[in-house]
Each structure stands twice: as C-alpha cells, then as structure tokens.
Length: 77
Image 1 (cartoon, one colour):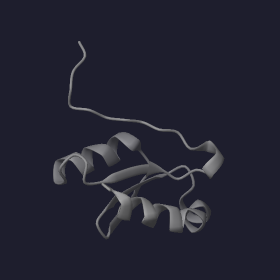
Image 2 (tube, rainbow, N blue to C red):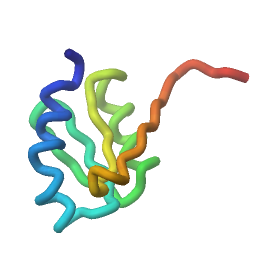
Image 3 (spheres, helix red, strand yellow):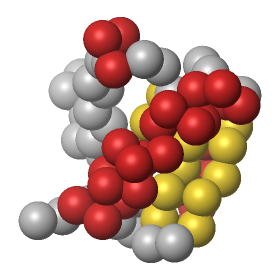
C-alpha cells in the first residue's frame, strides 16, 4: 500500500513527537523526517523535491484530533 511505511513511522513516533513538536507538521519521505511550523512551507518543500503520492505530511496532534486534508493538482475552477 502507498505510504504504508511513512504512516507507520508517524504512528510509532506520534507520542514522542507530541512532547517535542505538538501542532507542528511532519514531512516523511522514505527515511527522511522533517518538522515545520507552517503547513504551507512543508507542502512547498515536499512538492519541490518529491513526486505526489510519495510523501506523508501530517500535523502532530493527539489521535482524537486528527483531520484529513487532501491536495490535488486538479483545478475545479
């Protein structure tokens, strides 16, 4: 499954990261892990270096506060 490895990294580190990086965004691509204060900067960094569908961008919040955001290169205008 796509991004299974990246999500497993996120899930297994969430509690530790909550203590150090709560409300930040984590960018995970293969074994590369980066933290950002701003979601837009994290997304810009990701799409400038990685193909769509090859990275996970997740806000570090407690599990009961998870939200889903999907980004697409398709315009609906």
